[in-house]
Length: 183
Image 1 (cartoon, rainbow, N blue to C red):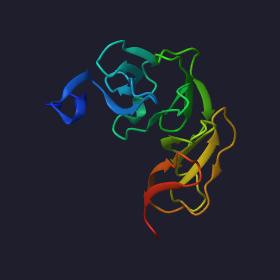
Image 2 (cartoon, rainbow, N blue to C red):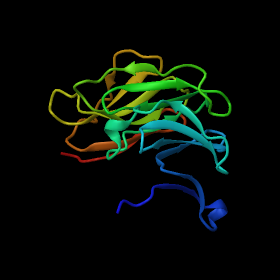
Image 3 (spheres, rainbow, N blue to C red):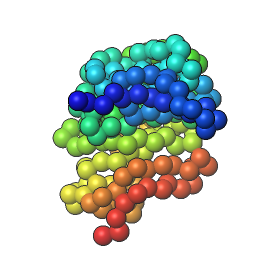
């Protein structure tokens, strides 16, 4: 029996409240009023109010079907205007309105095939996306950055190793932290 995947929000540390079912890989909107998540049963990207209201499809079914076990990543931009997601190899952005509704179709930011591009994080000014990828020449994973409007990714120096993951850019933009190995 597969466990039911629920998106839960404990209000003020209290009793858990079900916000959505069939939900994984969640991120907060900058104003903390909405959440973005993946619906694993169909691979769609959706937003929903923190009280479970106003569920909206941001990217269609199949957008993350290759990543359901890996949770490839999605992230709401700090300026609240975009949601970025990875389908495993490609990185996409969707321009969204104030209530998380899509204003345009998803836009390809970085084509990765045959490489993985996962675990997205935004720069504090919403102009760049950092991510984890195996596109390094040394067969390891490294952290990369790409302009939010697309372009050629550049490797973030000093981050190549067999196991580097979970990047997070400092809100001031001057540093990046990540989990990884030193060898």
